[in-house]
Image: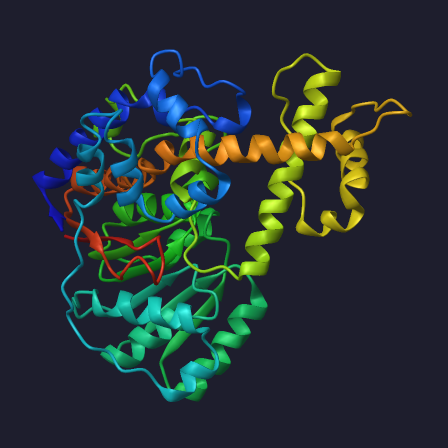
Length: 399
């Protein structure tokens, strides 16, 4: 865990390493046939180009193996891994049980997350406010565990109705308000003597929570941030004075890096996503030949587009991007080019994966430093193991 001045020290260490290796992690391989750093690191580039797609996929799930593979080319790479281990598991303040009925309504992994979050929550004998509550699963669990009233703020009325029904069933005192927390009226529900909780609140939602909590001087806050990129239009706007003083300027694509990880996926879904990635790279090769051999952004596409077949996919992407395809063009060779590009891109993504956790820590410690600057006592740690959710960082704060 990190507390008080440790948070600032850790932020500065991570800031320094991210700045030092900015040349390596900021460039997205799918945008480049040759990475800008290859001339300076030819041995590492040659090693990565020698990897098969299967070897890259095997390495990408284990940052320890990536570190070992790259150690001959990056002497101080172990420091990056050390930064990833700065946060430790939060102490368990309780061993919460949960109503058997709750298991009927909460998906297994979400249930595990709620239980782990609750165990890590220090009780301040205050009523709870569940920010962006959904059906109020977290608030209902905390209200039942601590015998405390809960206010839930949720944008969707149907989720509020479900939450009211479940609260009545489990006999938990809960009040649901259908409100957009990004609008000024949400502040009316925050009070000084309140314990705010938010599990995986997305970027703009938890930014608003921190702003309102500090303005209202709410006594306690437990926040697990998520989806940091949704709060970024072009460049990241830091929370804290500490981060504002950094020379590290993050773009939307930079911030997206720390979210490039999932824990559990069905193999069929993995295969389909990889096929779509291969086809997108193939179309990139095609449009480079027809335009001016530079990367051109492509809109996101659903997996259902695979049903068009490769030729139909290329025509669809051409229509979306305003590219006119010659009538006699045979697109089939580009599918093989896409496979070759996929192998290269997967390999050159590996060094960047080492910086996912340090980058996420930089973002979370920025939020923690913001709370410190507003007079809160703050602790940062992990509320659950990585296999339950990779978004397992927790900010605890109280006045």
